[in-house]
Length: 437
Image (cartoon, rainbow, N blue to C red):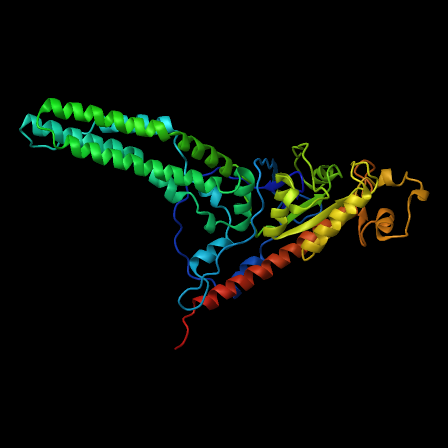
């Protein structure tokens, strides 16, 4: 199970060390019945709540850290159709996540250049050339060609193997935009490709000039000049590789998300007690960051942490645990909490949902005269949302009921995931059946 808190991102997950993936064999297409049979045996990951089933495994907690400013992009993938009218493979790729863990390792610019210089200098002339001038110009042209390729081939590997934005899951696209800003990721990859093209152009030009040398000395001079120009071209643009290194490191450290595992998203205003609830619902101790939760404002005015919460709600099959602090100890008025709650509930009300009133021990100390049932805000202040449970982490009130309700919620979420997965697989299977003409 993963527990994600609005304003603070908490991820409970298994995180194996990254390895370069080997291309898997193509399995035969699974029928919807076979898939349903496999999913039937999938159980909730355990170790999160004390009353989950057998087979408990250890989980740990990560903090999500995000920077830069931009909006959350909703799913804008094209609904391309294949020849037989079914969704194309490009569209089907969007159903999967985990692209960040398949990003290639990027060598620092200095290492790329040093490796290219070393390898190119060891390239010998073609055997059997007796003429000294011809042998020297042959060696010079081959070494310049090798230097060019040793620099440009890694760059081509990066541009081809970093995932294209259009192929990413909508949630991963949102993470890229929230982390780096609108368009930055694509610009860096384009700049790396532009550097590759520049290196190829300079390398081919000087290798050609060197190959036309008439004397040994002229070939040596043109080789030296060609090396200098290639290295200058690389040095001039190598900063884009440093940018790509930083992108790769950041993306590989992103949370591993499996949409087939039930996820609990804790949402609410700042300081309402989300991290305290994460502690009692998880087996790990969360790293708590002093960052804002959802404030009462329009979506286009939200900061990146708030937008991350909306991205999780928008793009992942999660269940929502919405936290209310009716004592106002959090610093946000009940009226503002109610406005934000209504907005989120109306927008994401189709999610499996549990309302929790935190800090109930503080609420019990408020005099009844402070409550006014004259309007819906007054009723919300006194009772909270319908069906909400009251919890006090400090006083250990309602903890058992909370754990039981969360367990029920995640069990229902697993059932929903199973049903959706079977339906999607059935649709894919039907789409792959050739139409009768």
